[in-house]
Amino acid sequence: MKFYIKKLGCPKNDVDADYIAGMLIADGHTRVDCDVDADAVVVNTCGFILPAKEESIAEILYYEKLRKAGAIFRLYLTGCLSQRYGSEILKEIDGVDGIFGIGQLEQLRQTIQADSAIRLGNGLGQAVDSGYIAGSKRFVDTIYPYEYLKISDGCDRFCSYCAIPLIRGRYRSRPLDDIVTEARLLAEHGKKEVILVSQEGTAYGRDRGDVSVIDLLRALETIDGIAWIRLMYLHPESLTEKLIEYMTASEKVLGYFDMPLQHINKRILKKMNRRITRDRIERLITTIRDASPDNIIRTTFIAGFPGETDKEFDELEAFIADIEFDRLGVFAYSCEENTAAAGFNDQIPDKLAEERRDRLMMLQQQIAFLKNIALIGSTQHVIIDQSDDRNDAVGRTRGDCPEIDQSVIIRGRKLAVGDMLDVEITMAEGYDLIAGNKDL
Image (cartoon, rainbow, N blue to C red):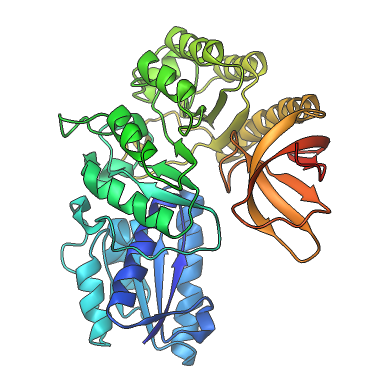
């Protein structure tokens, strides 16, 4: 059977999709890159916040139409939306042949192998152990020189706005040896950058007792072929000076501090169940920047959290203007059912939350553009992600994560995907940098 997987949501979900693909390929099925060439489509859904849920539903309805029109013969659903709303989907959508919760790879495999239709996977709604991700079983696409590597699943933080613990369960670290085995597999397929993803990178090993995130980084640094290791989702409450020092000094682990802060006002942080203070946050930022001027700080904030006053929003806006983060994203608050924040009686209108988000993003745009202008004339080490026949290439610096950060465009030079080289920045065009064709 020819199958196509529609990936939706975050990189952690993408990793799950690659494990599904690897399992089906091992069973003798053929992966195709175009949905209309497939016999079966697997939609790996996202159910994190409202826009992601709406996107997932739209994709399901699109493939349901293809299924009913005979363009595809089977439609299966997996992922977070299936985990969270499987029963509701079954009631509302007829053209689905099977629906499976997170990690129910074996049930999905058996159903596809039998070319059968079942209306419900077993255990839907219950988080499963992360044993379904196990080192060498994954499909590896060789299009890009980087790949995401999941180091854990679930979360214990229970931030009042977040449904992740309800969907994916408690925090569970993968065995270190499994992660190293998978990283070697990625290196064998030509991957030069591994991006470590989870709900909280700094928590790795906390539930196991015998390893820490630094132990994991040390082990990954020994793998030949891997040049960059990017650790994502550093919770500020558990980011230590020791880890900051290690990441700054390492030759392979990048000084890229992806530290979601969500807010800065003391009262709002407490309502969010973020057990950290503004003073602690400011000291962390100072420590990171004092460790090296080359360190990059990326963060995210939520605008329009229930009860956020004009004064509290102004405090957040002033903080962003003062700190001048290297990379920053803002989400308008999304009210997620069954979370603590959904029960707050001081919800802010969606329109106001979106206006506040836009104000912060406009501010960050000005900061980002000025930072890019300051890079003109500098030398930057880049990795090439894309290259075409016109001798144009697209790369990234050490301070840029794929898909969420900016790019470096190199014109007039034949380069290959995966090349790593020094370039001179000659121009800034908004969020992107333009580099000359001289290898410094």
